[in-house]
Image (tube, rainbow over all chains, first blue to last red; front, side, top):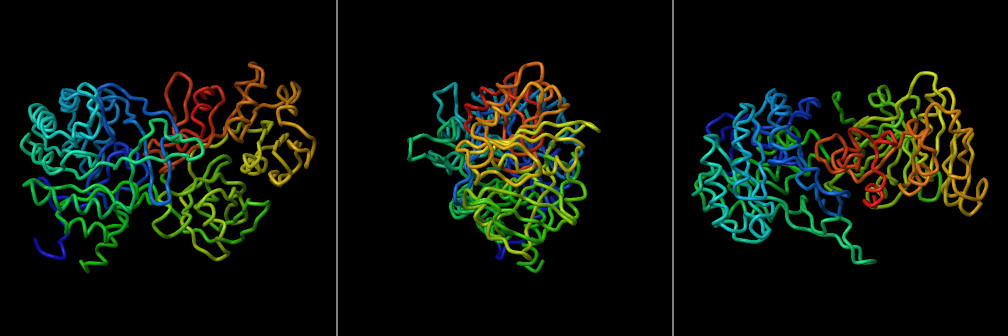
Length: 291
Length: 254
């Protein structure tokens, strides 16, 4: 690749207007953003996680801001795959950009089960498979930490869809490069690097965590160097495109992640501050590169 | 939901109205022209990267060309906001959420706890008839409103006692709508005091730790009857009292 990196316009054989994706959990299914008219500069939307059964989500408080980031414990709240198929995807079909559906599960089979149902819609281009959730059926460790499990999940999804899918890996335990290689062997068309970092806030007064589930997912602009390192490692190891996720708050950050080997760059927590973050990032990038 | 807009608002005036309580008046016709009582805004405490989320603040009242916010200085975000000076440009998203449901010509009973009464002024300016009951820990927590009945826990302003002591059958029966806003424990005490036959008149203004403020992140959930959750930012912040699952809400310790 050449430096400074060119702003990519193509992904999975399609023309994308922008390399900026909205990260799972920060954009609903995109349909609300359609109403709000803040999809300018958005290359693709990744939906919130969809599971087979509806999930009410975790008890509040679900968020805790720390001095330099945000802890979240949403609990994969979603109305279940059949509701998504019947009531949400018909609306999301009106998005001006591609939609990837983030899929989560509690067992290896659940990922494929969810995808099989979603195959009944043409609203989305592909999937993002969230292997960071706990494998409840096999002991509770995240699917993503075990390359053999990642392989089985990816193979299961490959069997039920011809659409491209990315596997979103966890930074919490395991070897991300090995898990990425297993995902590609199982048929993944991209790797998303990566999910949130495990974080916790403890009240020293009583030793309790404000978040009821004790540990939570941590996001922050301060994670940028950690994500850059992981993107660089994974993109050097696999042949499929890498989608970065995490640490982005400026156009400069997007360019750095592209230079590290990412082909698409997700923005998440920044949207909490700036609903129009994608357009702002693109403007900043254009100023920086003179493009 | 309609289009949301992010405005560069100009600070017109800022002052400390009570110890640790700051009022800021912003010029912003774009927000003021469409805001309704009980709605809130998401304000950027600083132009830098931190804090990573905005601060959701209820609109206290409308002004000639903008609106007024009244807030407790309780952490790094509100400390930055307390330093805002006239002429500063501040990014503010809004108005957001669903405010009080106001029927034309209705008479209101407003029951506020401490800084929870911030926001009542907008409702008082909008509806024809209001009776206002305010309870606070002490006189330093009684925000300036028009005519209202005040009690404090230490007796330093108004009578001594809790706001629930001011609630009477006569007031409840005479009001078309009842608005409650304050700390969760205070609102729960008020809710328990109100006999069942008046409860369908009650509207509760909630608050929650918030991410986006516009319905996408699912972070600000309020437990509702039947076991699920509703979004404070989009389906609230004002809910009917009977919608709320009080037990689970109290457990949340928000």
